[in-house]
Image (cartoon, rainbow, N blue to C red; front, side, top):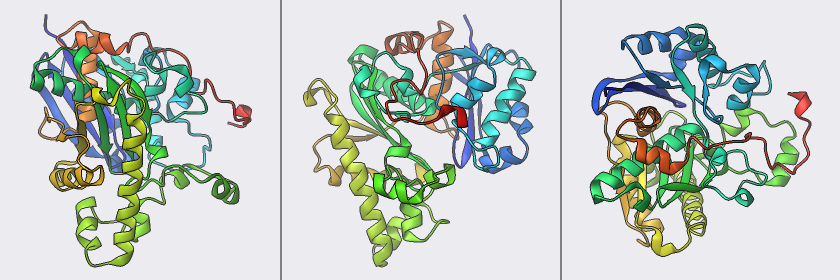
Length: 359
């Protein structure tokens, strides 16, 4: 049986599209996010370039329990984006518009869960948490599981690793045990290349009105004062510029703490076989060495296998999920992750009072 699928990764810097006919690549492209903000219909042009698509894993933001795009409503889009202020301009605007266009065109798309929706994570770990990893982080985890399955010649249930994904804006860390996501620290909780990460409670009080712009700023590049440089360029500059060195040290310190923190979620640290690193190709080796050094070589650090020439790991994983949901080759991975059993709302188990009606 042939399954033609597409996975989409709505990244901060670029949107990636990866298509498969079983294992054969039929689409592998990327477009700057800024272009889709200006002209969301470009996403549909890319999707429609591939004929007879069986399933598309649509851009899902914070995710929903599995739901067809043709069945989503505005409340679903709100829960996927968590965008409160209609006047606020940010990179998530394009996502909502593209979902509406996909629905209008009746494309065979599906919204997938975020990490918090998964039944494989104990409920007590979800309390007062929203961002445990967006849907695209779940997709990257799928790519990591496939990597271990094929590289180590093991079953999905035998895969165990810490996933570190370093994106253009956000950094996330996930724990995968027995082929299932058991915990996650989302990008708004760790300092990223651009994102500030967790906010000190007293600082949040002083800021008073926190918006998406606040969350997207204050990270490594903002501290260094060089918003236009890549992570590798900042590392090079850190060797001679004290401010940049301080910024980079702060970033690595936060990432190291997150790795050690999530290692405590495993049933035993002996279960952790390695750290799988997902990061842009031009920066892979040097950041791998930095992370290895920062954790004292406690766990081996491996570079996640790339199954595409252009698309990032999240788009690849999204296509693997689509294939698995249809009953294709990756079905054992997807079934073991219990993606079909995802349930609830991203706003469940929040015990800090806030007025949902304001939004």
